[in-house]
Length: 317
Image (cartoon, rainbow, N blue to C red; front, side, top):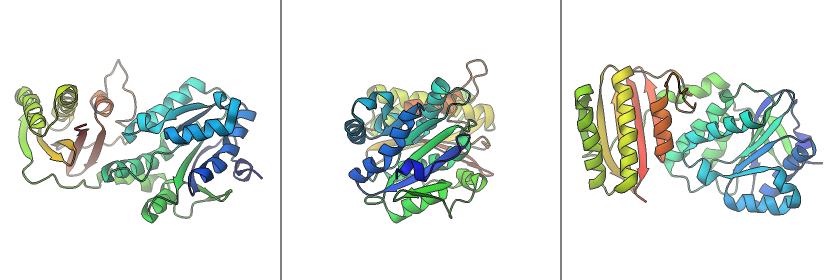
């Protein structure tokens, strides 16, 4: 019996499901029934995984592979905040009344740096509240052979359903949407000792742009990527001036092979999806955070009673 038939949800449900497998061969074995059924039922399907796994699935599906949309997760989701917009774009393009859509997305792999892993897990939590369209079945594979027990446990917390060995079950560790999205105020790691710091207000915004350019250059970030970091930092600082009390603090430092640029202010963000929704060109709301996510390798946002911190990551390479 196929994996899909064992865990078939109601067609009117939005279903967010973790798939536990062990090794690439098991990945193909577990996902091919899901894809084959989608093709048979003419349900549009987007698969966002590694290039190597895309090749495996194409080979297994043969000529039918052209009926599935594939995208490389290394291009779509190195910054995890870009993944939900990719799903939303797929749903807008292919959705229709009475039609179910499917997806396979694997944002977590062993080589993810710690900061990216944290944001991937936050992304998985936000997926539970991201979509209003109920006719969407999203399968998130996790390789039990290469991922830590901590990552696998968190997957059971962030997914209402778990499938393993061809059998699907409700996750006993899933606490509900409200409990998961409360992680918005968990603190980030402390900036490095000796980080450059600048207090800014509206008149000193040009000085902030010069400082980011200078300090990023000292850390080894030059050329177009340095310019992009300056643009992103300027957008976030402008948000601080507009929504965060009219002032803020800038910090810049190098961490391993990346330059980190952090903006702090006294405001509070309450919309958890604010950086994952394409801004309305008429209102312009959310433009700064959206743009920062398009320009930077990673954007981390933390907001609570003590204020808001936005940390931008830009790799030197």
